[in-house]
Length: 74
View 1 (cartoon, helix red, strand yellow):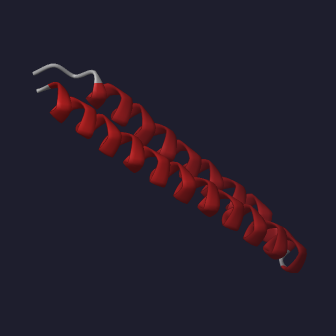
View 2 (tube, rainbow, N blue to C red):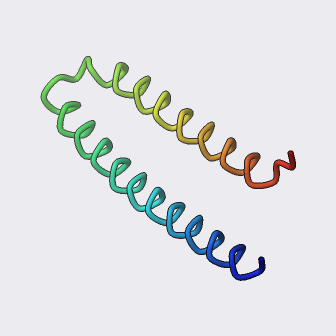
């Protein structure tokens, strides 16, 4: 049973690490595109700020749900 828990923990850590790397890459791409678009279309900065806010709030909600599900006892 303990070996199964260790394997499950390692798989969860691998999943979270992959998610973190993907999130950081996506965040830097969004910031880079926002800077480029801000120079080309200055009026679009407000729209991009709203989209980044939605993206960050969705990721925070997903992270909170992951934490809650880790400690959920059924």
